[in-house]
Each structure stands twice: as C-alpha cells, then as structure tokens.
Length: 261
Length: 153
Image (cartoon, rainbow over all chains, first blue to last red):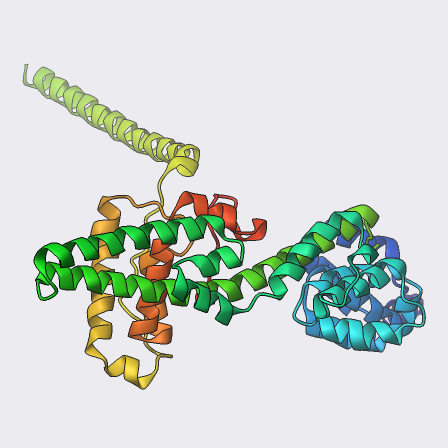
C-alpha cells in the first residue's frame, strides 16, 4: 500500500515538473551572462512551446546570432517584445549593420506598438544610409556626424569617373576617392616606367626588344591602374559605409548599454 | 671447493640479475622522465614554436569558366605562382601587407575571373603593397596583427 502511495506521489511530481514548469528567469539570466550556450539551449528546449518560451528563444538567438531563427521566434512572441525595450534596442543595434536590416526596420520593428528610443535613432541612421544626399546630418549625434559626412562624400563618387580620371593622369581616380598614398605610389611608379620606356625608345628605337619589354610593362601597369581605380572606388564605398555603421553600433551600444537580461 | 665455486657463481648470477633489473628499472624511469620532460618542454615552448605553413594548392578550377579551364596560359600562370609560393617566398621570408598575399590573390583571382582580369587584380594589389597604404584604409579592415584584410571579389 505504501509503495503504491509513493509511486503515485512520484508520478504526480514528474507530471507537474514536465508540463507546468515555471521558467526560471534568474537561472536563464545566469546562463546568458555566463555564456553557457549549450546549457541555455537545453534548458529552453525542456519547456513546451509557448509565447514566453518563444520570446526566450528569440533572445537566445540574438545572443548567439542566428537571424532567421530569431525572426521566426520574434513573429511568435511580438507581444512580449513590446514590454522589453532593451531587447528591441539590442536587436536594432544588431541588425543595423546586417544584410537583413531592411527586413528588421521596415517590417519587424513596425509591428511593435511603441518603438523605443535607441531603435528610433537607429532608424535615423538607417535613413541616413539609404538617402545620404537628402539627409540632414544635424539629426545625428555629434560623434557620428564626421563619419556620416565621410560616407556622404564617398557615396556621391562614381567608379566610372575614377576610371576616366585615372586614364587622364595615372592614379588621379584614387585621389578622387581620397586615397592619397595610393595616388602617390601609382603616379610615381607610372612616371618611372614611362620615363624608362621613353628613354629606351629614344636611344634604341621602337623595334628593340628592351623597348618592347618596357612598353609592355608600361601598358600592363596602365591597365592595372585603370582597373584598380574602378575597383577601389567600389571597395572604398563599401568600406566607409561599414565603418560608419560599426561606429554607430558601438556608439549606441556603449552609450546606452542595453542588455538581454 | 667445487661447492664454494658454485655458491660464488650463484651469488654472482643473482647479483648480475639484480643489477640488470636495476638498470632496466633505471632506463624505464629515465624514459618516463624523458616523456614528462618532453611534455613539459612542449607545453612551455608551445607559444614560441613556429607553425608549419600548410602547403598551398596549385589550382582549384571547380567553379571556373570553361574558357579559363581550357586556357593553357592559366596553368602556366598558376604554375609560376605555385613555384614562387613554395620555393621563393619561403626563402625570402616575405612579410605581406595584406592578409591574402599578392601571389595567392593572383592565383585565386585567376580561378575566379580568368587569366587577364585575375592577373590585373593581382598586379593591382602588388603595386599597392606598401606599409603607408594602411593609412588610406578604414580601421575595420586592419587586422590586430596590422595587416589589411582583403577579400577575393
């Protein structure tokens, strides 16, 4: 009889612990702060699917980034996010410099009733990226204004113009995008190669092998200079945009220090 | 007399066996000590040991265009790069400004863009190989070991 009672009590206990278990927020917070990733995931997986567990899963995938899974859980727990501005802000900081920023700022963030402060400012940063010429830089904090102005300048530069300028004076396309050292190096080496080719042409004639080799080098170098200017303009545009976004992300992160738990 | 001699022989045999046993144990312990010492040495000196450079491949043309695969000059150029990387570069202990060296960049660009464009891209990096070039680049493309992080595009 006693054994039967024990078994019933044990089964009841097991049943309760499996189905109606309470999420221990403090424990999740501890797992998150100590970065115990595997334990964190195992703990979350031990619960049945619900809005609140989806919310914690979304936070988990924000801490250990997996954007598509984050979006999936975000859709399931949008109501929970509305009361947690800190997580929303962290998500905005995370997505501002990500290929999925458009999806986050234009569809996900708009689903929340109130957009928190930092997220609003990051929307402004996002707008400054999308429309640099129409954007008023005074809307940005002072520390980001210089970076934005650099981005604004470079976004107006065109690779084809850089190529044309380099065709006229070797390396000028690089000066056009602000790479002074690269311009100096290209101009110097092109001048040396040009003078060498001219000298061998003047002293030995056009059909001499040395002149042909020198002219071959000069032509190759000229083509390298053209292609280089074109590619470097594209690269520099990307680089300065990324640097601006990195600076914006770290600025908002260190100023407001939003945390997950 | 004979018994005495046999007794002495027995004692000598036992002593010799004992000595051999002692020697064997000594050698055994010495070997154990050696392995422990070598383990300690390995652990202590690990940060200062130079890593062996992985051998670089000749070419990987799996994703290249058919024209690139059929062009014999592609193989010639890649062969020259391969020889430079595995023979010359190691001898002159070249220290590149870029994370992906000029020769590696040329090789991979040839794989991706074909011979002409690939070579020009590689040459462009070579002509921009100077320490002062770092000043033209943004902070985030400079790695902690002061090299420019470049990608094959």
